[in-house]
Image (tube, rainbow, N blue to C red; front, side, top):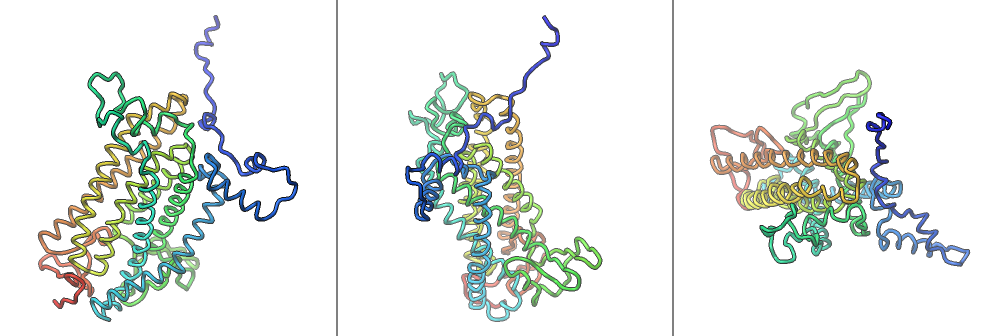
Length: 434
């Protein structure tokens, strides 16, 4: 025998060679073309609707396909236009009126930054509330959210010979992997992913808009949702630190509306977008939908607590803060690492039943490491919450350390004190004079 044959080995093809093809719109039209030779606009619109909303496993199931990228660009553009032209002006005006009613006209003049961020977080609250309700209703009967097996047990019987924590019926998180990659991508899942991807792209862009100011030549410009107005009243009292200066071309500086946890949020958004697009490309939309839902539900009390703190409604802030900590602990520190991530680490090997192991390991570590980074960020933020709770209990101060890591001024701009207790604005939406 040839001794060289022992070292010869033919590698499998690309990972996507194991995937069933997704239906393109052209192939859809070819398969549904009737005997009629003429196609009216009405007929074409009906075909588009049927392809997009009634046909499973189309190209819309992969957000990186040409068809999905076109839809995604349209969704991001529409979202940003509706957000900047309609929602943010209205929501910021709500914050302006609420602050003026609670604290007086002087508060409005000294808190333009808070007013801008208030509008942004009302938009976030609206999105997270709507998408959470949609996710809960759509995935309510999904088998991967059923964490009890057919006999009603949450753990396997001691005599079981399988190493998976659920029965052979695939109920529970094993259903994320058992039929991979042949599970159909339903239209609802495809659009759920497209909307989530569009929002996360916009969230990354919005974070950059709120964090940086660009000065072109001798003029200053700040893109986005009215952030060119950031340099008013109190925000113009000090020059923001310069990051990059190119003579006669541009100056890049930190904005006065930059978050205190910008680094953590920037990493989080980058990793999240990689996970969204990667999980869609590799047909891991089921486990991706679980991650989406856990994050969206826990973001609702986060947004509420930030809104209350921006207005310095102390009692409301405390109630929302306690709710946020409890929900965060259950979802992001409980379900996410010990149910979803555990399934990724322990059960995802079931993929190898239909996919070559080399293909499985080619993307397993990519997702395992990125999810681990997200979990570590969650732990870091939870530590920040504990610090905020400590300040609340020991000093009676409500500081949002994710916005101001060194503590924040009170409703009228008084700097944080290390020796005296700060009464932050109001106790329950009523003016309180210090």
